[in-house]
Length: 287
Image (cartoon, rainbow, N blue to C red; front, top):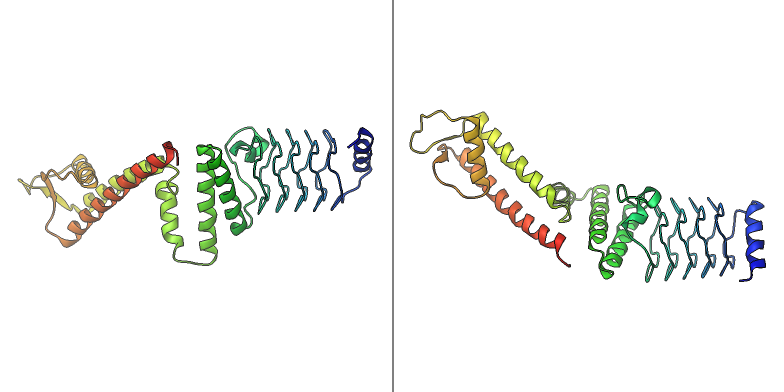
């Protein structure tokens, strides 16, 4: 691509042309250009230099961006569905809220979770376009596989969590009963990607069961049944039941309901403990 041709393309853009669908722009050197909202459907932008370009909301469906340079480009809200990004360099490019359905991201350079955050400056709020749960689920799965292949496990964890979140949205949309266990796994452990949620769930369980037993006065001192128990005793009993220690100094009263509640808490304790160990191993070791 000669400098003369690049200048001609830049001039055409400045003149207000909006549609570059199927255009051959391979090797174009366009810097700091305002390409917001333009159509590049099926356009050939391979080996092009789009450094610092504003591509917000641009339609790049099926565009060929092989080995293109997109340093610091703003692709917020752009449509990259079925685009070929093989070998492209996305250093500091902002891909927040983009559509990536079936986009080829093989061998893409400098791609991380940060690219999908607003302004590509921090990890908070990172996301792609999620208006279509099914296509978003597939896109997050592709990102997860890309990050895993490149050993970026924290970024893969983010993509895996988002993938399962989109799956849950699909289950809700079709009113499947699988939505309930999916919601439970999200709240309790973030689908195995957020260990701190298990700690929170465990504390809620312990305090919750302690409050239930306290409300109904459902436990008693094993040796002195008439002895009055304090809130700390109820909390203590709930904690040792959750951890299945069971010293036997405090026991549930002779009622099927209270015994069933104690058994339920013990089951939850074993379940959440096992889930915590699994999540830690998954989170902090190579997958």
